[in-house]
Length: 514
Ligand code: 3UK
Image (cartoon, rainbow, N blue to C red; front, side):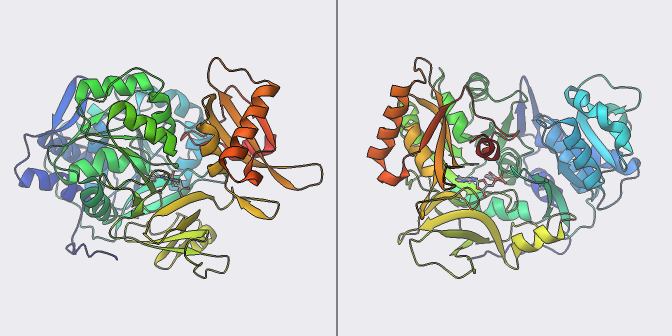
């Protein structure tokens, strides 16, 4: 069932997530830890207000977009909430993209101001003359080219006081580009109440995030997943967050855990897998969270065996803001996405949007009040995704009588082999549990007769060679573990899997290769 937020008619998310903490007496509490620095809630508030005033000084008006191309540091919450408090709309851009992607994001969003980390100027510079709407570039953390201004210049002489813009719960608040592995990215327009909804549902009722928690997310703030983990969940209860600007590797993540002693750690399955291959401890972590793709039961099992800390897998999406089906710290079903998060409803439907019988596979629709309003300037795609109260996730799921949900694959990844659905995800979970396999991906490939069969691309662990006996061994392993017809017809060994900037396997590339 949905929940009622009962927000006032004049509501601004920056007031809720930052100013409220000061009103409630947490001004001196450390909000952010980053490298050897720390920043209190009062410090975040002062910086946020100065940036908000600085943006207004540049002529930014309500609803104008302000693009953020920032690494995870203490500047992020100040810039994000500074823009929101001024009534502007931050657009959180992925820092792993290429120049032509930024050309698209900046022209599509029509951002008038870009706040960019000096480390990312190199990839921005080649396209800056092709931008049709950008008026100001503000550089943080490094040397400033003559055509830009520094953050210090932006906030110089600006007041630390700022009245929140007269927004309401349904005003635009922030945008995220959905990272679809195919097609053009779509700007998801999120509203002022969306983060509050997630904080009061998943944040409070699944994570149980508390004032004395320290959150650390290896997934960056520009991802919808990271934005909740590293910003609005901790800020919703006056907790502390640790930021790591570096690329997440097993070494950098273990190092940050050792340094800042987080109590909740947020990762993605691939990283959990590689962290299992590396040295390091999790001292102080009470709970681990996984999302982005299904967490293989085998990784979960080995993680708990080694670290004695549970991982709760949950499914979220950019459009829905955060996680809407999740395992619970005290109730984990390995291989399942868990149960509905309070505040969300689900339907599993067939091709004509009829509900499927219990246990049958269908497309997952979700209802809940953190779903974005629409995709910017993508009317057709908006109509096929946002169906009144319901959002089409394009994920294939089945449920069971106890209320657990099981991920089967993306609508477009599912394979019909010999007339029967084959879930690439299921075959992958099986292959990955084989001791020789480090990573794998299964896609559809066409055989001599034009029939679809499955093909597995595998990355073997060091010490195993990709020869014919290994191929035979993997095939018979799958045949033994799963229904016979599910074994992959072909197995090809690669040095690494092609990945998107967000770390998801580029299946369409593998499909083309297959
Ligand atoms: C897939 C999962 C199985 C699924 C996200 C947590 O990943 C996030 O958002 P994206 O928009 O992708 C959404 C799609 O990714 N997926 C995500 N989590 C799982 N599949 N098990 C999972 N646990 O296809 C979904 O439709 O990049 C994750 C919080 C916020 C997010 N935006």
